[in-house]
Amino acid sequence: MIFGDIYLVEIPASAIEGREQQGLRPAIIVQTSDNIDKVPTVLIIPFTTQIKASNFPFTFAVLPDSSNNLSSVSVALIFQLRAIDKKRLKNKIGKLNLNDMQVLKQIIKTLLNI
Image (cartoon, rainbow, N blue to C red; front, side, top):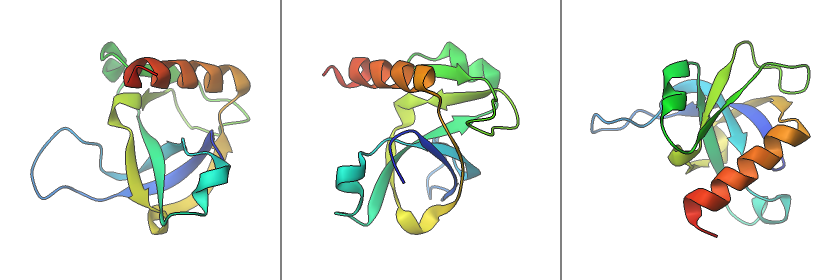
């Protein structure tokens, strides 16, 4: 499990109705491999197939390819960066290509102002 891997994850429903992603969906691992074994959680960015979500800031569309193995165009919801328990990771389905990883890193830097 490394930065840029795409896993199928189970994001639990919130007790309070809100706008957070939930359910079984692909998500990008955004924690460095140096830190993954140190804690029981992992930082992820969930995907949605709702293309209109790309109108929000801090998102980008990822086209399916042989590296990521996504079944359709998916929008990475970077503004929904969150930690989940590693037990919620189901299986690795792919990996972002290098260009998409660069875009992701730049948007994270902008979002977090680092």
